[in-house]
Length: 238
Image (cartoon, rainbow, N blue to C red):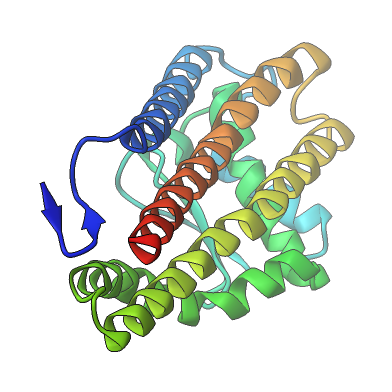
């Protein structure tokens, strides 16, 4: 079936969407499996995720960040506006190597913020534009595809593609931020001896699996953008 000069139908480019979806599902399944597995490994120090986070922040000289509890599973995050390290149900009070590793990772973001880590600053500056772009990109792309016979439709499509490209760039900028936070986490856990060498191996597996979800998300968005460009290019030729 065709709408205007662009094809909304099952063609080979749909494979790109399927590949992206499979990558994301696999990454999500891997991080949950890894977290569940190593959540059963209690750390020898007996420190909970909250206690480990407080120790790391103290050792890093960060005194204006608070460790708080939030509901949910794997909903852990660092909020630079409120300056809080938010730890989820399975991390805040858990003394597992998985919980300690995730808590340390979020503290890694707090350290980035305190040190003015450039990729984090760039990511933060992009958030307002990306929020705007993520909500408008697809409506504009769809409208542009329907109106492709008109000059206005062409420009609407171009704007939609630009906004979606900004979302992809944001996801790419996020990658070094996440990898660097994990690296800082492992270094501090090792230097403070919260985890021993064997436990660090398990923690690295959890953090590595978590990082791959960001890689998968970026890859899926790139494949989606490629498909949009292919459809738009085909419509222009038609």
